[in-house]
Image (cartoon, rainbow, N blue to C red; front, side, top):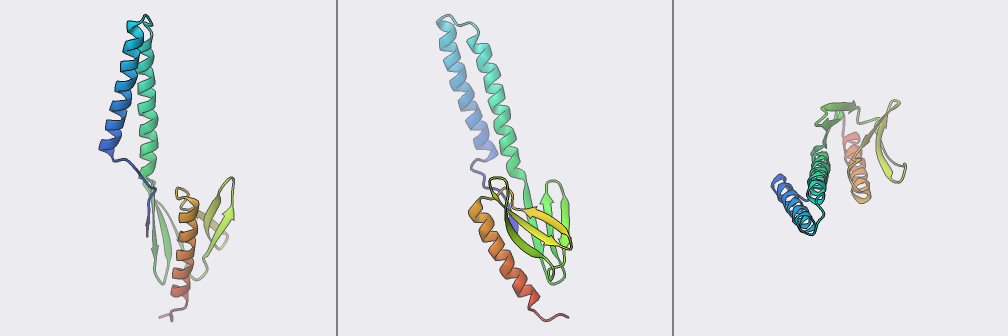
Length: 146
């Protein structure tokens, strides 16, 4: 499984949005300067830069993802772009939805280790993922061992 957050804008669309917002802010600042507010264009440039930076940071947060690989010998979760991975034996892993601070957390636990997965998913998607993982683990665990 490949888990990725929902992203509404492409990089091109993000650039267009930033350009439109900057143009609106600068137009408004130009009108303000024309009426005597000489600091309006400077404020509009600072504000446009801050908004562009904030939108860029939020958009880049959508690059994170998790890859879950399950077979008869292991369940592996690889976090990207950090390239961290954790491996569990499928027979012993437990899938849990625990109440956290303001949201439920989806945890994989085995042998005293816990790993939160799908933190960027919404509540419904996390619940669906937990059910799907439980079904897949049950199928794997009930197959005869070789």
